[in-house]
Length: 409
Picture 1: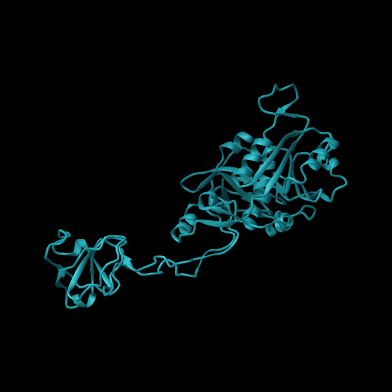
Picture 2: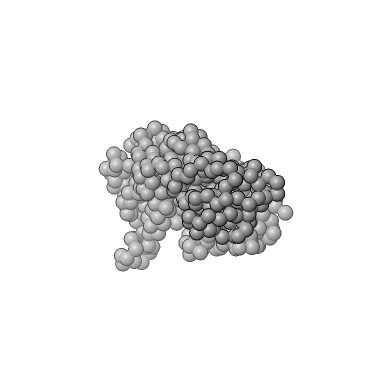
């Protein structure tokens, strides 16, 4: 069974820190939306409610290939009816006369006078006659409304089709197209200045001197941000010179909506982000989260600022836990992570004062296997994982077979 205890008061709760990030970005909602074509709207967040300009379907139509009939003509157990002119999809049919049945195609307009459709396989004979031939067909009793799609049965004219903040995927764009809407207002993309820091890192492809490591953060975080619909301005690696970093941030203050840095936010002696922003209204604190505890938040030269820790897994978890959900909530993009319940395939331990996020592989049988350990440098384990495993504050031990929340990656 899970073991529980109380959160330490010295660290900020994840939910509280996320709320602070939300409040900091909320003013961006006041920006004027942009109107884009349906093709360009894929993956964007809808900025205004959309009302249906017409009903779907716009007219009563047949759900089946069959015969349009007056149900009253078949009330006494069925009848033999004269076959009227066929009704193809897209045509406007003549009124259906009493005692007749009109061959009708799926989606074709139900003629005036008809109130039901008999599927072709229930007719005798069970095939359509040649056009123009004078024949009759035997049809069974059929209730009113059978196999009829009524006008507005999907959505009536004037009803709200999509609400503001909806993520526009294929299904939503299909509805807009069906309503005849060619373009929609969407929230403007949030433009992010991404700065990775550290004298110890070099860009992939460069010669790797002794004591140095390749920078994974710029690629990892920029890719995650672009997947989430952000417009990313990546500066590459900034040195551990505070004046250089401050100049870099000032030089882009008119180009972006948000500044995100990685590294330099802990309590060490050479934390460049803390040093460069010493005169800015930025708070450096610890969030009760593992990995990703050290965080920076505030404003830099008038821009919202988030300082993520420098270990690769920590910076990605920071994005997934603190920024990505806020973007989905405020702007409708990206789509929220799918949250599931899964069964642990092994025991685990967790620091009970922190919300721990482990990486795992969810199998088709609903079990989750942890991938890698708790350390924040295990990028190969992160690459193999397909889910984030949540162990909430107050949980010290979970046993194999117990359920956990997972977010699908």
